[in-house]
Length: 268
Image 1 (cartoon, rainbow, N blue to C red):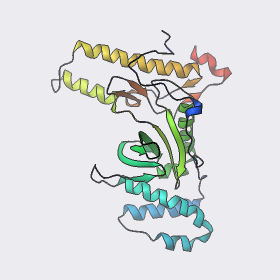
Image 2: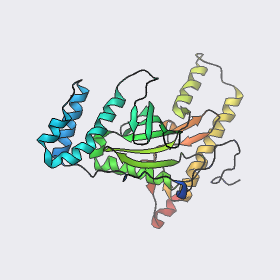
Image 3: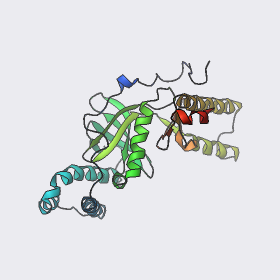
Image 4: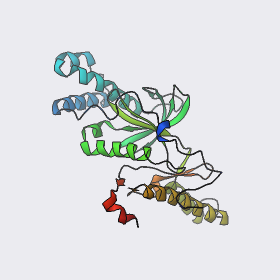
């Protein structure tokens, strides 16, 4: 069996082809980088929300008619991001972003937030990665976010989480991907360390076999990417998810580099 093309019957179905990739109807990764005045107004609006106040949206639009269209588009997104960040009962939905009903937050990083969500039109469970508001005005962060979505969309492998849709709704940039119920390899490793120190279930020989299998699956995913001229460049335990049935998924391709023909010798 080739290292780059696994054939494991116990793993989930293959990643959808490019033709199967559903692209959101709104243009992805828009609006363009806002002007300094627009960014300042949006920052002030978000600060008011975070301070527990209720800023007057209509007053703001009336005071800045030349920016009203852009403000109208972005304010809903800012309100969504603020609403989703407020602690609430786990049974209460966090809101809706376009076709996606937000269920709960599952991860947060410097660039964005990942939510468990439901794609309403297809009634399927997905993971929704949302670019944080501040990063939307950072061209480097926007490029990284876009690069991650575009890169993963070109890789079709069992151990690489597929992208279902990309888009921008109310000024909020996002992409939807397959949801995997599991833990990061970093969390799994921490649990194993606890077991060795007497705070958990003792390690069994089977654990060693499972760990080796996880490594092989991650290596298969990286080999697949390398054959297609893509280097992950940020592979680490926190970017590897172990699912409930032992399936592994390599995440976070935001720092990935696509190699041209001149760089291809780096993969040898």
